[in-house]
Image (cartoon, rainbow, N blue to C red; front, side, top):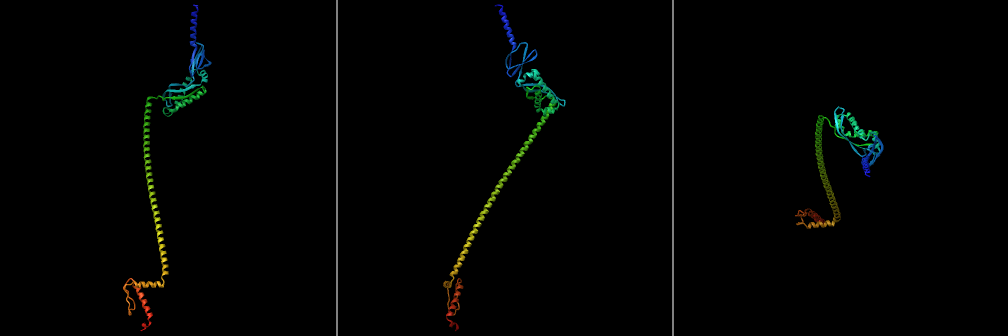
Length: 336
């Protein structure tokens, strides 16, 4: 029994040693691929604990979730011969789980060095070589990330269908110090120009506002004047209508009075025609004689003298009529 204990101890130690190198863990979001003697095995493993042959088999954990690869300090020569450096380029990508084995088999577990890092260098230099510094640094800089993403994805679709580029972020490149200062001066000038342009726009806007305010004020005064003028016209028209109504009323009144006077005169004339009979006229004659103040009679007086001016003519006529009456009554006296 004393000789068995060391054997058991050696066996347990050997088993623990073997398990230490055979048991391994695959993290979530990764796929395990295995190599044996340098050859890639067909089997892959999901996240969790797995066992492999120690010393003969090795494994690599390949990420299948979104990952960001940073390509740093990429040199780039423009068409004008100026050398610039992109400090950092970030490529966001992910490898589909179903294409892990195929991609690793064709490009190894470090597939991103071949398919992303080297491709970024190539495409970026292609872009810089066909554009000058002004275009790369200023005019077309906002298009670099999109162009880089599209060009890399086009190649990956053919070379590694399971690898997808989600986004590319490019930092501002480093340029020679003298050129950078010139660009800073140019930017300052542009900034001053923009300030001047904006100030001009503000002045123009203020002038436009003042003009609109003046137009509005003038339109308001015009409207007020128009309303006042309309009110005066309405007042005059009202006065005219009132005057016309008053004139028509006066005309109608005068016409009615004239008609009444005409009717009265007509009726009075008709009445007089009825009243002026010989007997009535005779009565008026004697009434007129009775109203006189003094009357003189005599045998030798051929006519009557009236001392009143108001009834002179009528009395004379009456006296003459009486004389003629007496003469007709005593014809013999006239002959003597």
